[in-house]
Length: 474
Image (tube, rainbow, N blue to C red; front, side):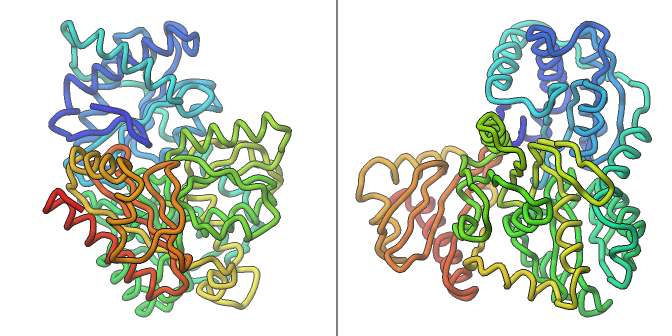
């Protein structure tokens, strides 16, 4: 087991039972050691709809109780809802979820009472887990008090304050429910704003939906549904509801970084914090100060904290997957929106729909009006971590290695090594190669002057990765 960009993740076969108890106990002991919790304090536990999540959650509850804390079971709910409730109680929490990765994998996200754990916390938990691993671990399951209703009500109230009453009246919006824990809350929140909601694709088994690299199968479904039902948009989220998926009236997904940008404008932000993988045109898309970071919410949060420490007040963070974080409070229709420094899918989805409701232009026109370069991203799944590490080591080993590797695509004019390798060609096109931080996946991000060029460049980039892995040479 290891930490990546979004918590602890691994195969279910490795995480269930002993490992989940080990890390839950290590988390509790870490909280106690740094003064973030005291014996007997409440700690919240939530989970997604994966087949393994109930058993892992129950194991964590048992381990937390034996470590001296009081677990409260919040059931299946979006990660931002759990985090919001946690911060309101000034209590720590953990979320059992693997986000968008397949059902044979799962993970745990950890939160201190003040928000997501950082890299120092990860190191502390890992060290304690290593010490505990030398002895016997009790991984018998436990049960906690039910806190699901309170957590859900608080999150619904937050999202019910974002927009004016009835603002979505006249819009017909689909909710692709699949297996996201956000599925029922999206329906209730949208209907409360007056939208005509069409429920789509509810599933009893887990479907991994990656909002940063939406699959061709998912896009096909979105296009069929928008045409069949005459929808103005479709909204959805990943498995734990912290990354949004919003399509236009044709079923074409809006880029996650565009949703983040729309949210920043909606809130009137002064500072944007976003990873290097987000669209390169963001710096020119508004009167914002832009801070670029490595990929992962801990780095975005650190960037937001840096901005706040520097005296800025309107601070928003977002990732290329669309997950949007607020580092400061903002004035919204219902009053004051409190900071929520963790990824959220509801805020960006509602901000985009509010922009659609404000005029007669379709969502596709709104998306194109921002003038961002065309971007695309995808991943190679089941790509061994050892292979991706070897490839990145090779590409970084010499000044010419990356240029030779990318020579079939063009001449490299500049490169960045902030997180992965990001190459800009002499004609302005961009290819960014990056191993996933917590899954056996190799990701490729591209930008180009047209949609056709971007799709071609993405296909070519993925082919180069496949060929290198097959031949173990550039």
